[in-house]
Image (cartoon, rainbow, N blue to C red; front, side):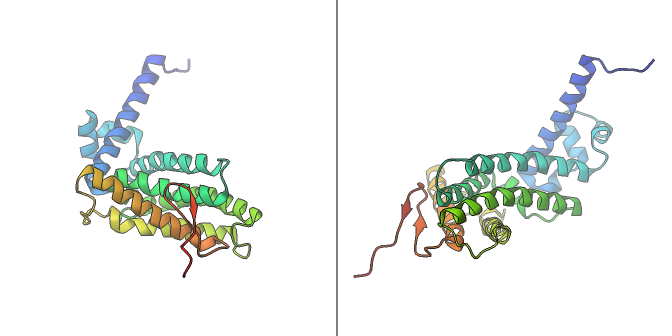
Length: 229
């Protein structure tokens, strides 16, 4: 007779897995990958260390799962923007700005996902994450080219690679735990994050725009520089 797990057992197993992932994510948010040792995760989840290994054979497996789960939410946000009805230039600006602002909400976690040195498996998962974001940006760039708003002489895959690499690299300094510029009052943080997001998004749009002098404000309205007298 083949043993079949009851609904109660299935629910308990799922609960344990979720507790482990939640605990690991919290620890990474507080101290990066180094803080999320398996013994620390087990203690935070209220489980034995051996129990964690039943669900995740290695620390790297656990880390990849955490990175994949968090990253997928960011991919979904960009995907929603890419599917919007707005002109491509506004969608590109909105996608980049949204990514930057969401990253700055949890700087320590975002730094771990994007740049913190870690195991080779994490680097592979990061590449998959970047490729997923790049695919959404490619769609926007292609739409912009078809509408005549973006340069037609640029390969969409190259454009997406440059844009995604640019805004992620542009975030590393502000995200770094060594950077305390965004540790001031909450209102100041919001304004500075909005400014940072707008500037990075403007640069990304300018890289593919057919009108280099045109920028897009952080409020999503196309603007042009004042004419010289």
